[in-house]
Each structure stands twice: as C-alpha cells, then as structure tokens.
Image 1: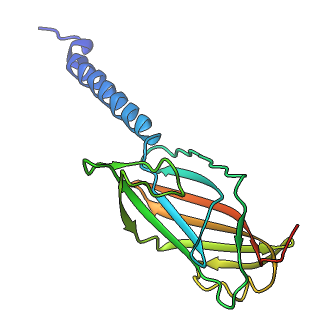
Image 2: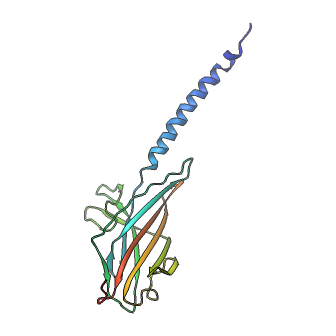
Image 3: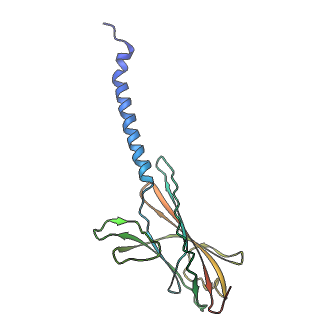
Length: 189
C-alpha cells in the first residue's frame, strides 16, 4: 500500500485553512473594534469658571495593530475670560458617562454635563500641562492646580493639557486640550 505525500498532509492542510479563516475573523474584529471607544467627559475650570476650547484624541491599540484616531471640537465663538486674582486655580475633572440603563456611552460634548446621564469621576493621574504667553513657555511639566505664579498679570494665555489613560488591556487614549484665556477685566485686544 503506497500512500502519497499529498494524502498524508491533507488533514494538516484543512487545519491550516480553518486556522487562517479563524485568524482572519479575529483580526477583522480587532480592526473594527479599534475605531470604537467610549469618550470621557472633561470639565476644565479656572477659578471655578468653566473653560471651553479644542481637543484632539489619539487612540493606540497595541495588540497586533497600532491605530490612531483623531477628533476635534472647535468652539471659536466662546472667549474664555477670568478676573486676575491672587490665586489662579486650574481644575481638571474627567468623567465616564453612563446612560439611564447604566451602560457606558461616549460623551457627545466634552464640555457640558447633561441631566440624562450619570457621571463617574475618573482619577486622571497622568496629566501634563503647558502654559504659554507671548510666544514664551511659562510652564511645561506635570499638572499643577495652583498656576498663580504663571497667570500673574493681565493678558492672553495659551494653555495645553495632555491627559493619558488606559482603554483596555492593550490600548490607551491620549487627549490634548488647547484653549486660550484672557486674564483681567480691563484687558482688551
């Protein structure tokens, strides 16, 4: 009885084809899942005044695939104005958003809490801050709440906030906020 080489490898060929199909389906799921994530709501205040501006998000999926996605929110109509005070306190609060059924959903608006949803505060431990004025960097480093030493005179200041968080085992989200603020009641441009 002579058995050909093709007959010996036939069962392995079937297993290989089935394995490739399963791998293709798994990779397709991972690729499709990369574009889906739950955006958190951010509340940024300077001396208890709500601040609005622009944001950009990058999502990194590090299991087999790296995937970047960017989103922008431009609010050009609002000018952030605060009075010049001895204490200038910057607070950043990040919230997970849940619907009435208790399912996690994305924040449609990064700047406004809505009554239809519940919010769970997130510890945003990885936050970086940069403050600029007149093309000079006044501060660049870890997030600090008291920025009185840097916003200490009337004028326009540009502030950048970078928040990094994990979004699952193999992925992370980095959010970049940028806004400007006019400090001082009598300052006009």
